[in-house]
Image 1 (cartoon, one colour):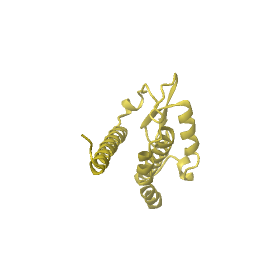
Image 2: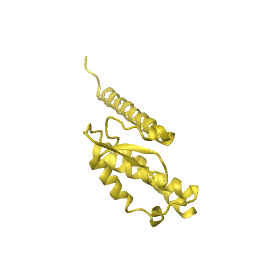
Image 3: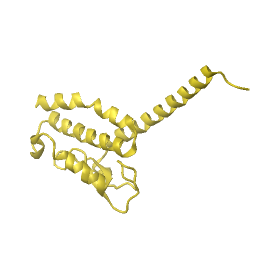
Image 4: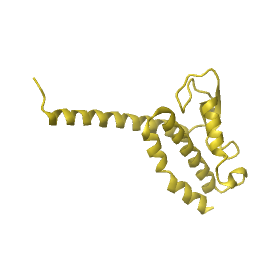
Length: 147
């Protein structure tokens, strides 16, 4: 029995929808874990890099907001950690200071998350991370202006 073209196209769209929803659910779980991470959990290294998913021999903790702004970390291989650290050097000069309003601290967290998502998209080839990151830009800007 052969299917007509309409059935084939709709079937494939359904598979794409299921895949996309599954990917979004994974991103949501990862982001929520990161946001609600305790200090104790922040010190536990994963078995894989949270950016490129490599199973390297050596992992480092990368502070999302920078060490002086927040304790929350991801596990990163050396290469990804170096790239993320280089991205932090391009941030607003206030990032170098440690005494900030909550709005500015939140902006630095969102900015760090943005960097991670952009790099994760590049390393995994999954454009959903980049699309999600682009949604954060306006909020980062607004919070940095709020002081």
